[in-house]
Amino acid sequence: MALGRKISVVILAAGEGTRMKSDTPKVLFPLCGRPMVDYVLDAASCVNPEKIVIVIGRRGEVVAERVTEGWARDRDRADLVRFAWQPERRGTGHAVSCAMEQIPVCDDVMILCGDTPLITGDMLVRLFESHLSAKAHVSLVTAVVDDPGDYGRMRRDATGAVLGIVEAKDLLPGDGHIREINAGIYIVNKGILAELVSTLDDRNAKGEFYLTDIVEKAAQAGYAVNAFVCEDASLIQGVNDRYALAFAESRLRETVIRNLCLGGVAVRDPRNTYIDPGVTIGRDTIIEPGTFLRGKTAIGRECIIGPGTEIIDSQVGDNTEIWRSVVEASTVGNHVSIGPFSHIRPGSVIEDYVSVGNFAEVKNSRIGLGSKIHHHSYIGDCTMGSNVNIGAGTVTVNYDGHRKHRTVIGDNAFIGCNANLIAPVRIGKASYVAAGSTVTQDVPDGALGIARERQVNKEGWVAKRRQKLD
Image 1 (cartoon, rainbow, N blue to C red):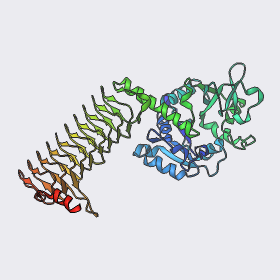
Image 2 (image 1 turned 30 degrees about the vertical axis):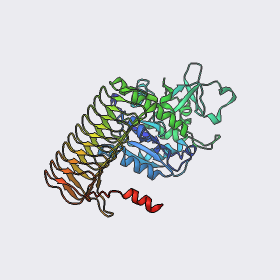
Image 3 (image 1 turned 180 degrees about the vertical axis):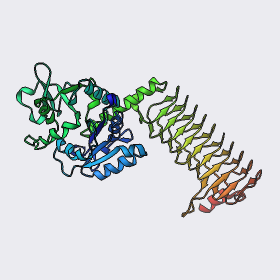
């Protein structure tokens, strides 16, 4: 980092989140498909820390497992993260003291809260630069807001120098006018952090060791205290209940959609469109209202997605239209049409120029170039060639009650309406299957497969039946 100084990060993630009214650890609540702590980790990594120490408490093993499996999945990130246990909740100051042994040799320690998912790496980098520029021993992030709520308030002297922080529960009558709040984000020289934390006491309204008290103690000891004022107070918004969670998600979604629009994507109704941060979309694609794009989804150029469409962990090519349908963990090619009301289930590959009609379902199948699957059809565990016609109501019967079996359909085959293809079965190239057939044997190339009883017409049957009933 700048000026050759080494920094480590401590993330406080041991809070129970009682106002969330859930057994799920608060930092694991999802925002746009990812736990909120992931966003804090992303931002923290931007300062190039030596280590990131996450303080965990009740159900901390769940937090550690999720971070290890998710954010720290790759080796570089796994080596970056350590965990420290806070066995009992005795305040933020006590949480930092629990992390001290895990912090490596470094010059400065940045302290963050695991429930502030809107902070950005850019903001943290600018905070560090401000800390270095001011030659501060302690730096903290503040913001001026209309309603300070439960946030701690900044106390300054007549010259503007920081005197300390007073928690909301400990406000004095003369503190009511203060609108500058503490964001709970700090940088402290490693050499004095242990000293400051060791002097904390729990003589306050909550009976806890407040980390905020280190600011006043540092100022009284003559250390340089630097306040970095964040102009956008929403970035430091903490998530303490589900309404705040919904607000944070709306802000994050707004940022994602804004960036996509500025990159050439048309989003018809941003307030009614839900796109995860990891999603990529090509230029001149139109996203219609009611669309959900989740996970590691990638959409190509000049597509029309929606309305009412959900695409999860899937890749979609260029010039493709998917409307009122669901696509999961699949690959969709170029110039494809899907919908309305179709479902592409995991493991499917839809090649270029394919048409999947309304109320059709495809599962774990490859659909070849230019093939057409018409309405009310189910294609499961199938390898389909190019230019195949699947008539309405066709089903690949893939499950015998114990195992799944595969259907293979050759190029240019024509499957008539309401056919049942009982797997395992192979339909040959350029072959036909007559409408209404239940096929249990392979159909050779170029053959017509008919698997139904011969029609019998009984003349006068209706009149005889009526006469008998009378």
